[in-house]
Length: 215
Image (tube, rainbow, N blue to C red; front, top):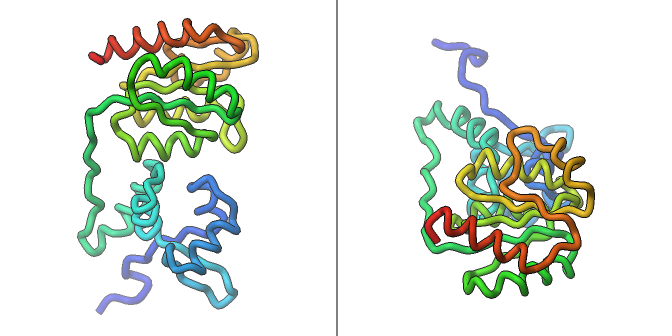
């Protein structure tokens, strides 16, 4: 008869770790738990612990971006029961994602790109951009600001490049371009534009990159 120590032990995530993964505050995670949206296990010391599989299901139901690390944790945690997470499907209708914490900058890009006659999506932060990319697999181009709260543009770019290497990214920045190039560790974006840029330059670039992917 196996001892308790020989049995598979479940993996748990703390509330602060969940907050980091989801790009929200600890209070938001506590609200999800109190409202019954996110299952948790309460320790004798009063701390909330979350199973990776429960977090994955919650994030999927909320159309949130799920890091590979979390999916791997969830899969390992569920192997004891032989249950694995289903693969997500994608669509093919093209759209453009504009990521900038400055509403006026997003409006400028949106007005310029309306000439493409394609759906335009907007995000204020890098985390929101990654959530939208998961929720909208039809996104075919990303226009990304470099300086944003929560997650810097270069970190967001790295995540996009790892998860969606086929999507071209146009980076816009108010800093010298050569200085910004040093911040990219995986690869360089398809194009970098200095703020303030001419709207026609963004439109021409968008048309060229969309044409390259057959749109």
